[in-house]
Amino acid sequence: MVEIEAIDAPETACITASEERLLDAAEVEALIEEEGLIKRSSVRMQLQSLAQKMRRDGNALKRVEASQQKVETAKNEGNDTSSKTEKSESVDVEAKEEKEKVDVSIPAQVAKPVKMALPVPSSSVKYKPIDRFSFDSGSYGSATVSVYITSLTGIGSIPKEQINCKFTSSSFDLTISNFNGKNYRLLKDNLDKEIEAEKSKCVVKANKIIIKLAKVKSEYGSYDSWTDLSSKKSKASKVSKSKDPSSSIMDLMKDMYDSGDDNMKKMIGETMMKQREGKLDKGGMAGMGGLDDLGDI
Image (tube, rainbow, N blue to C red; front, side, top):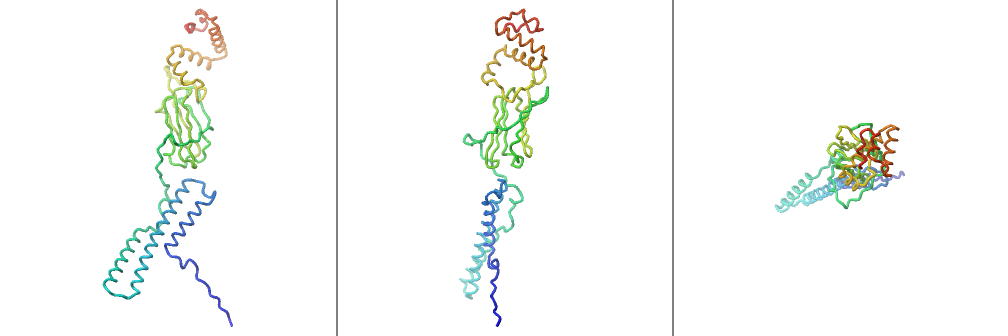
């Protein structure tokens, strides 16, 4: 005698459309929770939106199925009374309305990045300082100096609205919101020289940020040379010196010393040393070629 073993029908054959959609949502949520599987925050947000959409659709489909079940039950009872007929029609209308609300297609968020409103910057926001960058003072007479930030790999993939850089005549303030779950900031408020804020700019590349600082032209039409990104003098000292007429002459001597040849550096160095020691009279400046007025400083 041959023994026949009963074969159960596949489990998926008993799953309703609502259960199928809820299972899909659960599987997407499991992928999101998997440690180290999803590294990009934008992909995580899109998957979360997809899972929420699937769960809403699954719940709506469940209500449709319940309404249809009521209709089938009413029909099977075979009661043709007017009250039963009105109830059945009401259930049919309810089921139709619920079904029209359900969008069973994959939502558009999967194909397009989700554009989120950025929080308004406030003093309570915590920033991680950007302490790794390089400074390029440019060539002689160049119109700009540059700051290169290359430690933020993948920075070009986030929405441009999350990157902001404010410029003043003596500072720049770069802030980055929600990059890999953190906020970053690079603030320099005591630049070596003044800049033109309206001509300065922030350029975002795939894996780096370049800040271009536009130099201010001197009264002679040339651009000053920068020795560093930040000034070694305090802001208060720079303000007080700007009010002192003699400070501009001393700055001129310093620039001449920095850009001059060995003979010029030696001459200026000896002159300034004599001045500090009180050994310099006005006639002693004659050898400086037109700088004898410095003896009064």
